[in-house]
Image 1 (cartoon, rainbow, N blue to C red):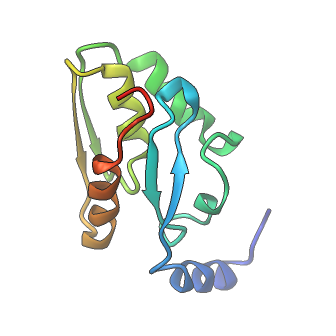
Image 2 (cartoon, helix red, strand yellow; image 1 turned 90 degrees about the vertical axis):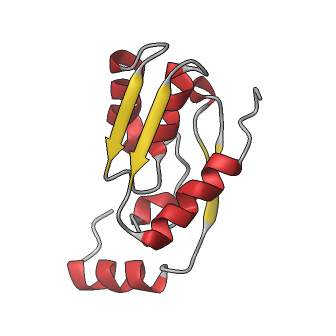
Length: 117
């Protein structure tokens, strides 16, 4: 869906204080994530739709068990938490994000328990 740029900016600003819970796909533990459509309007959709396929493929093919992963510009942490699932408990993931409001969403997601915990 193509939304004209001015309308997209308005929708993103109007969504600034909106927080939604979305789950990663089952293959990444179905962890619930705190997300905001202010970061990307795609967060109004589920996280298992095709928009995230390349990111999930990268996590699945480039992250290994016990890996150390840095996600710089983590935004809502979709890649960081998918990578954390692949890296397992013995791995480490550092999600770096400059926006303090977005960091609060990341912290909430970190407190959420994955289904297999």
